[in-house]
Image 1 (tube, rainbow, N blue to C red):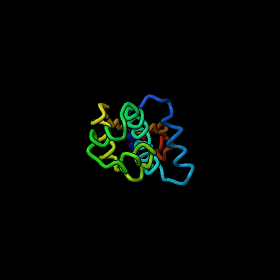
Image 2 (spheres, rainbow, N blue to C red):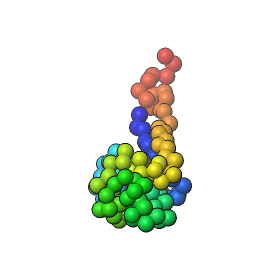
Image 3 (cartoon, rainbow, N blue to C red):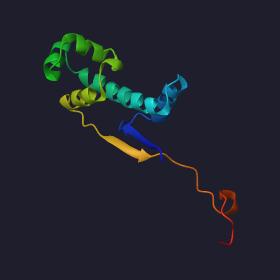
Length: 118
């Protein structure tokens, strides 16, 4: 059973971005994690546009270089936990939704190796 997690973001690009990460060589699990971070970072940068870097530094309780890294999309420098914290501090409600991936229907009968009539 495969499980998939997504940050709730309404930009219609969920499948495309994850596939992009897979296409450049990341495993499906790594691609899902990168997709979470990318979507969250995008929302944070949009919310941060209302503030100066100095205001963000105070609001997020971090240094100016970290604020700069955040605004420039240097996601590898931030854990998912930190991005969630920053989103909450900027007034964004974060929610991670976990759903099972769609599986193909079950095969029954002789095709599944089960003799018919038993």
